[in-house]
Image (cartoon, rainbow, N blue to C red):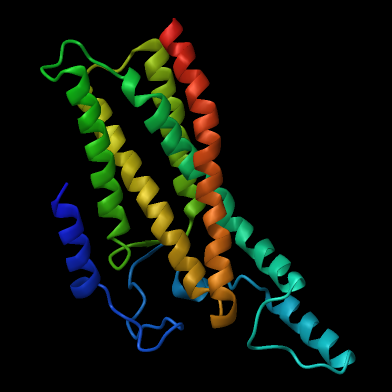
Length: 240
């Protein structure tokens, strides 16, 4: 554990690309060349053009000018939140499913015939999950996935599968769970990084900070709901 602060310091000072100015973040790097579920021509801004035109017409009729700087007002935040729904909901589902698995199911997936002890099996589950998250969060510039909803659906399937596995105990060996947990980490990390990358590229400088902060409600909500659901379910399985 003593190596963690050193690794974080090295990452911060030698790996991160600092912005040319603060607080605006910009990068001259090109977008990923590989896209899944769409191409660069399918760029969908959070605020639709029709809504922008409507705001412009309303501003002109009122004799006022549209603000390009300054704090967002309440109406503008509502418009942005409406566009963020397609990111917040899938992200919440992904985090609900994966934390439901991690908090409520992994401890119960024990294989006595394995050479690994119960504690060792659980540690391997958690380690492979984190490795999967690390790999997928580092893969953005090799592979970009626009359809985050597909990732949330696949993660939900994982949660259902492992719930049935705990109840019916049909999985043959521990290595099957290890593969599923690694795959779970890949899905969770990919959903996270692709969601926030899409938001950062589809918002203007003025809306970006609020959009990124508002989208974080999705994963926080998913984690909270998963804890409230996983704890009683874990207790139920233990009482069988």
